[in-house]
Image (cartoon, rainbow, N blue to C red):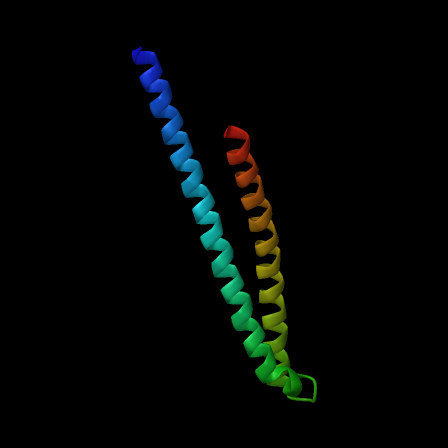
Length: 93
């Protein structure tokens, strides 16, 4: 009987960790999406200048493009990790 208690307790602990992991992944995804949106706003402000001869704006645009690329890759990998976590949760149900 006691063995079942520990088994149930361990299962609850595992589920709790999995839910926490899923929630953390969602928060990471939301943070990355917010950062991408901020870059997009900056793009709007400097794109014209960057493409019409303003070298400072062009340099800033290059940095924004690099930052956005990294964030977009992060967004994709977080989405894959989140999907894997959700599938694992569904498998355990």
